[in-house]
Length: 102
Image 1 (cartoon, rainbow, N blue to C red):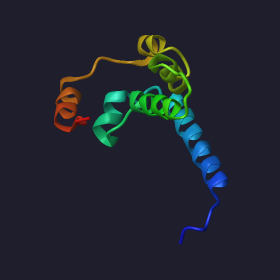
Image 2 (image 1 turned 135 degrees about the vertical axis):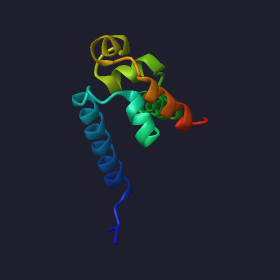
Image 3 (image 1 turned 60 degrees about the horizontal axis):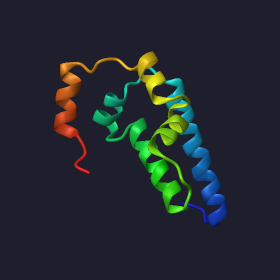
C-alpha cells in the first residue's frame, strides 16, 4: 500500500529520483541512446525534451541545447565526440521497428 504523501514531499522525492536517474545515465556513458530507445522507449534526449517542456510550463526560458547539457552533464557535441558510437545495423533495425510515433 502506498502511504499518503503530501504534495511538497512527493515533489521532493520525484526530484531526487530524477537527479539519481540523470546521475546514473551520466555515469553509464557506455549505454548508448539507441539502446535505451530500443529497450525502454526513451533516451537522454527524451529526458532533455521533457525537462525543457517542464521549464516552459513554468515560464522558464530554457532551450533544448541547455536542457541537454543539464541531462548529459556537458554540451551534447562533447558527449557525442567522447562517448557515442555509430549504431549497428541491428540497432538501427530495432529502432525502426520500435521508434516512438510522437
